[in-house]
Length: 89
Image (cartoon, rainbow, N blue to C red; front, side, top):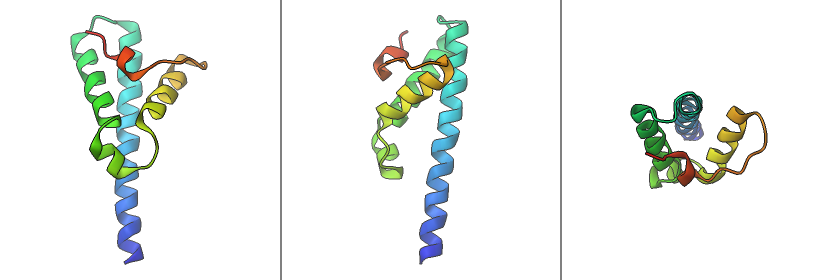
């Protein structure tokens, strides 16, 4: 039973790590070309994931907090960015 729980936790962590990598890549792309429709759509989708029910089922880490930290990691400095500011059309 403990092994199965650990396997589910590993899967949940892998999903979140993949989404975080995708978010960072899209955020970098948005900084290079803010008008890119595809990138903006991807960022909106990822923010919806990080602030949605499924994400909250996978982890107890606050999704808005994680988005801020991901933004900071790309920006290279501490910067307060709200998730709703990331997905402008």
